[in-house]
Amino acid sequence: MTDIDPIVGSLSRRSLLGGVGAAGLLAASPAFADNHAMVHAGLDFSDKKDRMKALIKMRASMDNRIVMGGVQGLYYGVVNNKIAPLYGVLAGTMARYKQLDEWRYEGTSFEVAYFTDWETGEVMETFDNPYTGETVDVPHTRMGPSKIIIGIDGREIPSDNPALAGMDISHRFIPPRIHNGTVILVEEVHAGTPDGFKGPNFHYNEVTTYRARAEDVANPDVKLANDSTHFNGIVTWRPWLKMTGHPGHLFGTATGGRYASVEEYPTYYVEMTNKYHPDVFGDTAALLASADH
Image (cartoon, rainbow, N blue to C red; front, top):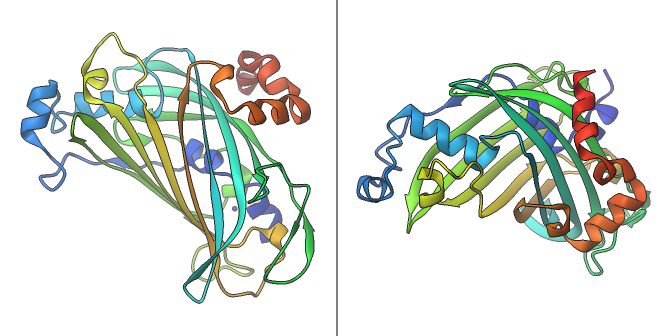
């Protein structure tokens, strides 16, 4: 995400999701289609209009409201195919989208995330690395605001994040499907150093699953439909862990969703963000608008 440490240190899931290169929104395939459920819900994911509707409602918003969301979860170390608990993660995003034409939406997104103590859930300033025995400093993640364009074929512009320069990046949406009245949309991301890269290798893999009621996705009066978000990630050791040369990687898992207001974020997340990043909730609209300047 040249010296790889500052590159990797500047990457977050939102910087990757918010600005990866052009990608394919796949046509619905028989393996994922439940035709009876789609007919009952008034949706047809073989129709690109319904695929686009699901993508925007579940991943963004069809109006220009500020879209708030977040996840809370855990990171494990994986060495010799065995997991070991390391720390937690508490992340929040804010975004605003506007429709450019029938098939494209422009979004501006921002993220603040914290690594937390596994036992207490409190934001860590230092971390005792069980693999090395070293106590290391723990950074916060603050990324954005950055712009993207979401179209029927995915993102239409590359990221302006310099951390992604020279990286091999891929992205796709698995075709939406319906299960028990719920639309399920899966998003895959990979970013990593290319073959032959001179320096430490870095790879970030993410699979995020969005869920929403099919009736909300089909309802033209509902502009944002997201009941839950689930994140899984496999990531090269973060540089602040000081694990260069140590075998293994990180595995992260987290759950969350969309929030209608700041009050719906976890209380502790709001407290920490007001303490360390007061501008984020102080005037979120102005923060997102600053990407235009």
